[in-house]
Image 1 (spheres, rainbow, N blue to C red):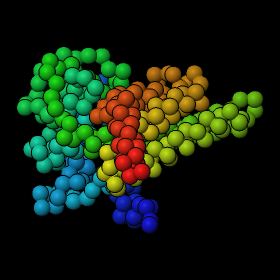
Image 2: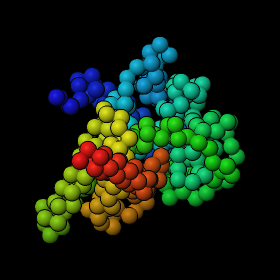
Image 3: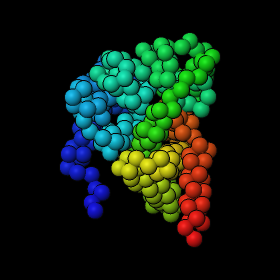
Image 4: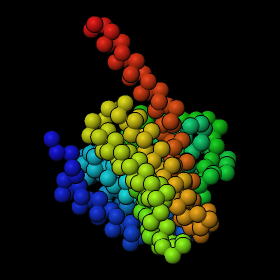
Length: 304
């Protein structure tokens, strides 16, 4: 069986990467930081026109008619670019909330562990709620993910599996990007007359980053094909670990430069922390896997 991306899937990924490189490069990223992660409505509509949100919507309903395997490729690229905004919720709302598929509406969700909603101030709708609830701003660790605490939590459980998988894809994209940043800096920064990438300790850091990111990417791709709840939980768990630890290792490779506000590495770490609490936390993923393991043990016992 061949599980390699098809040529069409590779073209889709390349097209999204080119779009984001042209419309959301580093200057746009830093501008977003200055504006507090405000959703760029023009870019949002452009993403809608490109089929980002309607990717899995049937063609009969005006969508692209593709599936989760294609969606995770697209979201991986969005994670690599650190594109802000409630991407997952708006994608899930396509065909449910008017304007979501076309990118003319910004849709958020009760997707954090607790009564918190990301980008509530800019949301036209919130999955799991009737209308847009009122909320109180709370401080977010990520300057590109403004948060609000609402009085009553909604219910977006119907979207949890797909939401967790797409968030895992975002984490994978970020993890792979931090590998690129670390390797590039290790080749440019010199100490003792040679690039720091020549030192074994730095090589090991970069190698571990790559292994974690690739293992997580494989798990995400597999879960996108099977749709199995256990595999989705495992993919989210691995992707969260790859993104968070990868960003930490990338900071270590950069040394003091990695902690400066002008650098981008800290943005990957902060976003990874926030995403790790979205849709399915590590504890929730472990619980799903434990329940599956328990079921397998009980089934084996009955057979014996």
